[in-house]
Amino acid sequence: MKCKKSCLITTATLLGLLLAQQANAAIALDRTRVVVNGGADSVSMTVSNQNKNLPYLAQGWIEDAQNNKITSPMTVLPPVQRIEAGAKSQVKIQTSPAVSGLPQDRESLFYFNLREIPPRSKTPNTLQIALQTRIKLFYRPAAIALDKTQAATGDWVEKVTLQRQGDKYIVNNPTPYFFTVVEGRASVKGTPVHLTPMMVNPKGSAELQASANELGNAPVISYINDYGGRPKLQFTCAGSTCQGKLVKS
Image (cartoon, rainbow, N blue to C red):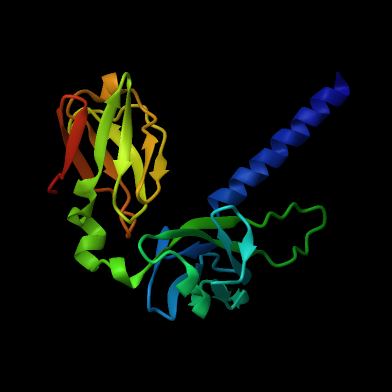
């Protein structure tokens, strides 16, 4: 019993340290997703050290959709850099000629990872944790480029439809862009229903993880745009098929 209590106290202490460290992550990115447009040699992002007292190392790399670390057709420069306390720096995603081998009629999905590495503690028996940020990275071919307005609230999303099947809606995405659903309501100002966020592939379909009965016959779903915003689509259903319209803010 004594050992069990001791183990529980140790575990609770470690969890407390972990949560405290997570609440005070030092290295921060200036965005929640990044789009690399076809024809661009690189995309730069701002990285900041939120810690006002200590320098940190920032290590970046890219993974493909299967979570494999890659260095082509895109790579991170510099792969590791030191950022002084309270300072900002730039990290660059560099493309290579190999991007021409990616599909040119739709987006391709990758992940950008950024890990913070704290300086070695001078205090003995100190637990240090390297926290990591992981965001979606989309390669968007020049043939399907969007301007700033279209990237924020482009009417391309109005091509997305819902198909009701029993107590579920199927999201049909005929567009060349990834479509990420994060919220669902029965009306524009209604209370959000229980919904598991999901991403639908370009020219693909997937079952919406929410009750169709709760969403009703005029469902409203929120999706994430290029800037991390959450525009709303309100659907009008005729039979089992529903057409969406952007909700003007």
